[in-house]
Image (cartoon, rainbow, N blue to C red; front, side, top):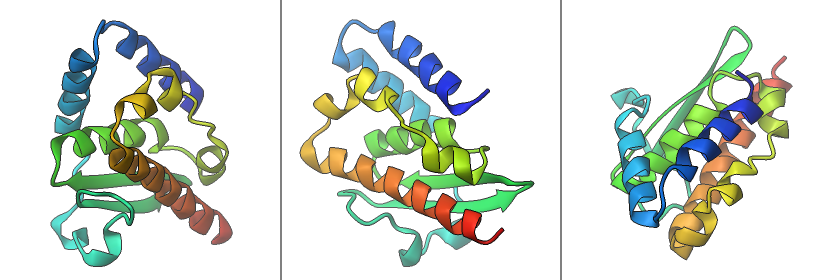
Length: 139
């Protein structure tokens, strides 16, 4: 499944809910399936800057695709990072760099997050794309 197909799948999943409480609960549930970062990577250099809560993210290149793992000390943030990993993990660097990620706007996430959480989401995306740029330059 490519990035756009995953985005479309998420848009359809979020359309099931009539209100934002349901969407938040779904986001929190997503956090429970987050591919967990290895404890050895929970270091200060893996913390995403710009997030109000602490979010650690690690990436590695396997067979030409980037695999992301993460953790957070906040349940909503854990759900947000799980959502981004679901969309971007297991794709080639170029696909990640070029991903438009329109689904974030379409599911209404940006309007329903506090300004600090919204900044955190932007920071997560920036870090994931930055990692992709680094891996692309190594080949």
